[in-house]
Length: 168
Image: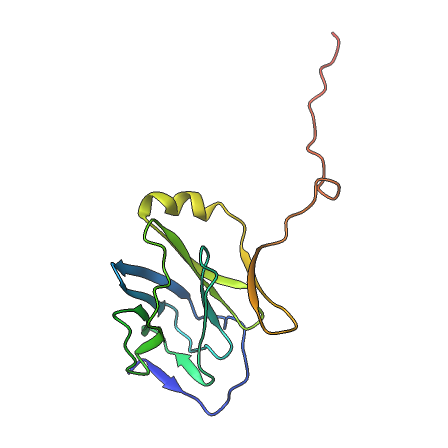
C-alpha cells in the first residue's frame, strides 16, 4: 500500500522530491470526496498538514504519523458519503463541506503555507490559478482562518523602467 504510518510524528514541510497535488474534488450532491496524490519520488509526511475549503473555511487536519508514499493517493470524505477506511480513505465529517456552485480545495503544510489547490467547476480553475497563494493562520484559541498570501505593496515594489523619448 502507498500510505503508511511512521513512529516519527514531527511536522514537515514539503519534502524535496515529493510532488503533492489535489487531483479532484467530487461533489456529488451530499456525497463528497477529495483525492490527494503524491506524484513525486519521495515519501511525504502529512503530520500537521491540513485540507481546507476556501469558501466554507472548514479545515481537516491529517493524523500524526501519516505518510503519503510515491504514487499513493488518499481520499478525504465528507457529507453523506463519509467513510473511514484508513489509511487510503479518511473521514472528515458527515456534514457537507464543498460548495455546490464551486469551491477551491486548499492543501496546507504544517506551517500553514499552501502546497496545492484544486478549483471546480473547470471554468473557475484558470481564474483561481492567478490568485496568490493562501495562508492558513491559527489564532491563539486554535481557530483557523484563510488569508491571501503576502503581496508586495506598491511602495516597496520597484517601479518599471519607462522609455524616454529623445527629441531629435
